[in-house]
Image 1 (cartoon, rainbow, N blue to C red):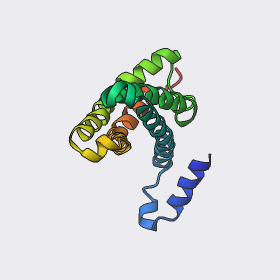
Image 2 (cartoon, rainbow, N blue to C red):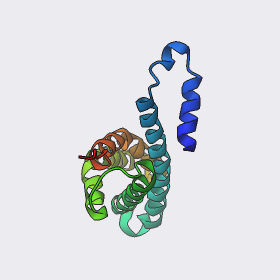
Image 3 (spheres, one colour):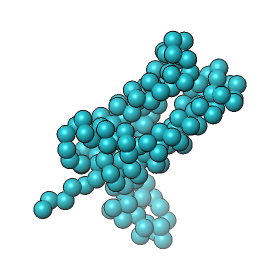
Amino acid sequence: MLIRAFVDRIAGLLPRQLQRHATTRRIEVLAEFCRFGLVGILGFACDTIVVYGLRGTLGLYGAGLVSYLFAATLTWALNRAWTFKGRGNGRAHRQWALFLLANLGGFILNRGTYVLLVTFVAICAREPIFAVFAGMLAGMMSNFTLSRSLVFRKVEPI
């Protein structure tokens, strides 16, 4: 509710010619995107913590893979409970698997960026937080669109 109220407030501050484009549907999508982004920040923190915790044991590539699974599971759970609450259907384990499958494109963008940066940019190899952050940004729009349209789509009553 707080995020929706914030987005409504921002829409009210737009110039009059732009306010007509701020429909209820668009405002709701923007509010969902803001919630998705906040969940993403928590996923980023989880991702970073796991990479730093496991890089000595698994190396940067292994730590990056394990951290992605941890962060993806956390973000799925939070998106299910908050961002897209009450949307989607099916059992949790199937929805989690669909979330991972639907976000495969985002995973490729995310981890592809991460791997390229830790391989070719010295500061990212020393401080992988930069690579984790760049990867998160690269996959975010794809993940939001696919999560909203496939995993947590509105199920209309029959």
